[in-house]
Length: 263
Image 1 (cartoon, rainbow, N blue to C red):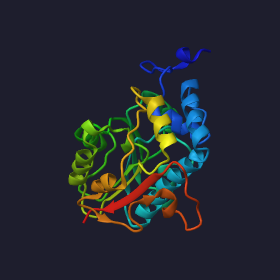
Image 2: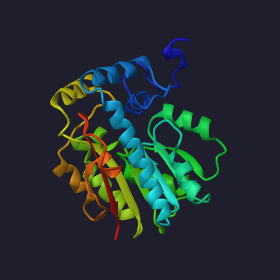
Image 3: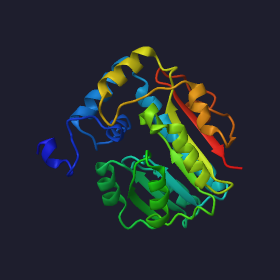
Image 4: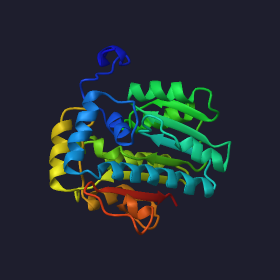
């Protein structure tokens, strides 16, 4: 079957998509030829990009584990991507089976796969929503995901913010989410760093220009602004592998990870 025929309505399989490129990097099968080509061109200049993708995934799961062990029972995964096990709900519900997870993504492919794979899973809700519209995300998390913003929540934004362009004001988006969070809540996020090797930056931005996978690498100083108003959790805003252990190597694709706690 041709990819255009098996794509859900409203999905263009001729243009790369961030969630599907990431899925390919993690060894998943829910991607199209165009996503594979973009990923392979990135790997040609930074073969360890797949390793970085796994570091980023492990950072996400550690953040969930830490938040759950700290007593948080509500999780909002923005830009959740196509489910890969172990997923956010599996980690959170291992600590407490009553944990609720709202899995939010603007991509209909992700939405379809999430509903298909997790249908009937207690406490998990797939939601269509775009990080660029934080008020809509907050409202849908309340009404569809049954998230109570009067109680602490962990908001997870992994592999997303570097796809938000400057004129879409990512720092203001984070500030809006922060204002909605109760004290004791957690924000965990990653972001592509301008410290990435120039060849990777040039290739990835060129290959994704004009698509939903268009990427904007930012300096650590720019990204640190997203933690304004939060207590920064150690080790601070650092490459994601530094959250995971002291013996993990640096990579050519630099992904920064940060965690903040709302006082």
